[in-house]
Image (cartoon, rainbow, N blue to C red; front, side, top):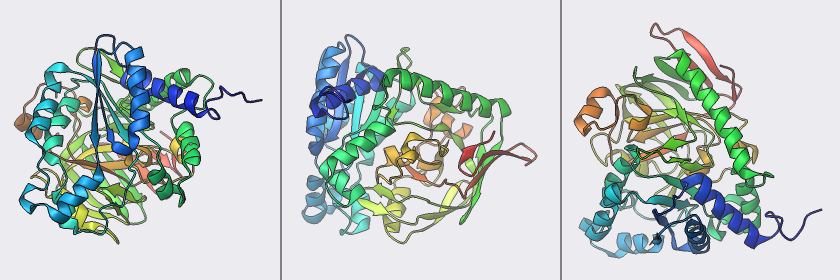
Length: 412
């Protein structure tokens, strides 16, 4: 028998419990620490609940940073083209200050208007992307200076994209399953899940693979690894020793590849929601680590625009493995939100690499990271390439394969 306090029935208790999971398991806000909540204006209710839980955890100040996609649309339609993608200096300065202030950073995802920019000139949409802001923020994350988390914020617009109707309750149930919020003890459920992912990462590291190959319909891709690449998962630890789980949900084991050593073709197995548009049937061809050809039935110019963000944007920065036991995959949904969809299946990312997944990368300059093989870019876009029809093999230095995944299951 359920009661009024059942978090899947009582909306207020569910929201409080969710915010508690975000603050204490995800970001792990510390006593005496400041926190920043980055979100869309449509996420306000959840952001407020997160703020209350952050204060309960001991935060000294919680600051919201709201965005509104309609402002971006107005800028594209009516503003001067030369200003597109330029973030106000005060926001750049405030973000740069995080390097020394080291607040807990909580980012809410779940686009309330995922196709808001879909009918606009894709080149202008790509130019409107705030790459300058990410260029300030990404190094703070990559250098493990702040404890941070990205979590979802169910809303009517996102629900409409997923279900064809604004069924927020159905979306909340799916989010509860994917984030283990529906477990009797969500914190303990996350501890067990974290331990399982760490075992997978340890198995991959023990083999010391030189490369990973993906093979399936439209995909024949070999991603080279550095000798210093290390497989990671779930929990991160900041330079100050704060453990946190950056993604809720998270189902991946991942590493940073050698930016120079990816070759072949790859086909996306999920649609990709990015820059106010949905990219469908994305196909990339890579040589010498660089993307040299982009095709898609919808949204190819958006991807091309991202790949032109800087000199390194067209190289890979991440490779991640996810199998069919994923709690996200078990929902049977396409969420049109990268936070969720990337945790339903294997994925790769073009753009910035992950120095925290490379031995000896801490403290290196941009030139030193690039020389080592770690990509440095103002962009980082994940897209999904796995599934039951995609085999994953680890290759040794002689090219001999060892099966890692078959039929959407880890077999290593």
